[in-house]
Length: 473
Image (cartoon, rainbow, N blue to C red; front, side):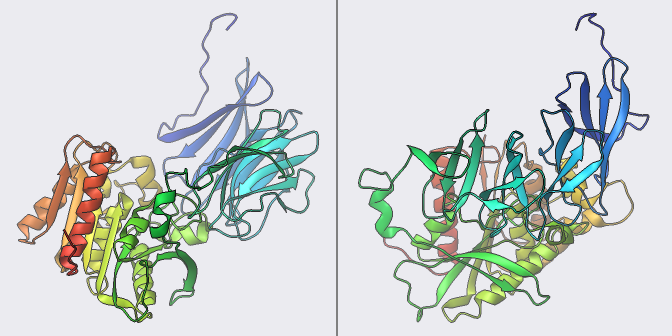
């Protein structure tokens, strides 16, 4: 800034790469950047020193499949060390490094994942982080010494804790919820002791949820082993006044894609609550390929989207069929975005198990989707082979047997509307009947109260129609 001269960082001759993160160290003359290969299998972090622009490699990560990016690079104030997160042992854990890139020690370990670093108290020598040490269904606050030692759990209430520390680190705000408790906000000291409520949000007679408590349904959480010994977690809603002697229709409400998790003990996503109140059993399963269970749980989708996820959802229906109150001839499936893709793939590939489906904003052709996301899992579309073809839906369309409704926002700039119109054309050319509801001007989230009400009623009415459910006017 003094001489107003611009100096470019030499990133090498190969221009086919990503620059996902750039961050200053605590030394104002030293900048770091992370270089990621086009195939996302290699990441290198380098330090650049001003004004010489000399570069030094601090660390590198490699994977046979892909590397998950994160924001858990933390430079310590002593200018001698930094904290880094890595999945090199199969689970996301924290590692301490010397500022020159020499590894010092691994701070966390085990078959569970760290969510993110929340604060580092250098004076006390403590790292505070959120993670899934106790259960993958909840996020808790933990601490671990920088010098190494035992991990200590600081939050006590079962549920989901979203933590924000003050700048000095002498207290933190906890945004907490469960699947049955709307969000509460409280102030705590670093030991976890609550100082005061900032928003207790108690569900008393003055709360907007209170009039609906008599209809509120608390879900069940559980897990089972698949035929190849994978443990899958699920959430299950049963209708109010559930009668085990009655045969109930089922909605499999899914997402199924990477980088996401749907089965958590946290507030939100009330579609399941709504459909259970309409008399449906609603089942959600996190299949292999989903997040927060470690790399071995995620990686089966590599170059194989639409395979293991579908197989695991079939395992979920087989599990449901062990209960006498499940009607196997009235099992529907619904999801949006990747869940829309999954809805179509399950309907096309497994009509024996999925009898009707509603697909929202589905990806149908992976060559139309975001390249950084898609190439992470399917590779470069220019490479030889049929990975993209086999992972897209079109080759399986002739397997459709049951009624399928597809809805899409016509202004969707995430999953382009063309994904649906390409499938419309194929189904029409095949003389295959299907249902459509397109939303003019709506994007990927279908925002707006009237749109949301229309969409929910449409989904319910569709399943009611095809599962023979009649309601009073």
